[in-house]
Length: 113
Image 1 (tube, helix red, strand yellow):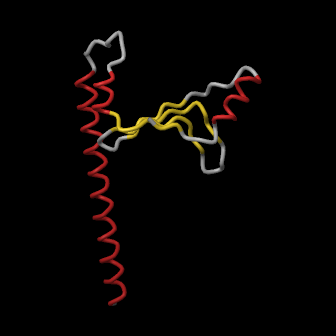
Image 2: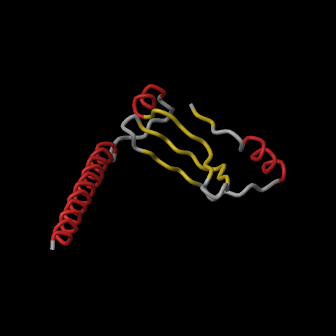
Image 3: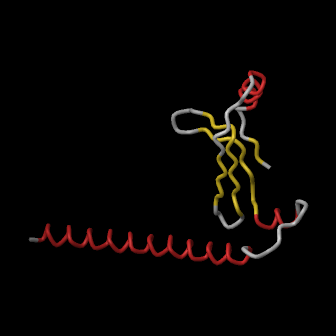
């Protein structure tokens, strides 16, 4: 009987923890959607604005190494100042041996700005 009560308390704590995490994720989604709606109707500037970029982006990571060791050189990850990550992946394939060799030569490093 005592074991069952202890298990029920553990399950209830786990449920509460999962509910808090779900609420946190939904809150983040809501804030991101509000943020996106602010910029929805803004006209795109014809040139890159370095100051605006620096206000939002903490760092940029070019290239991705998957868990199995596979290198994806055509992936860019933007790490925002608020911790949000924006992943841009391209299924581009190199069309020449020169491109493949160039990708292999630079694939050992992450390039971070």
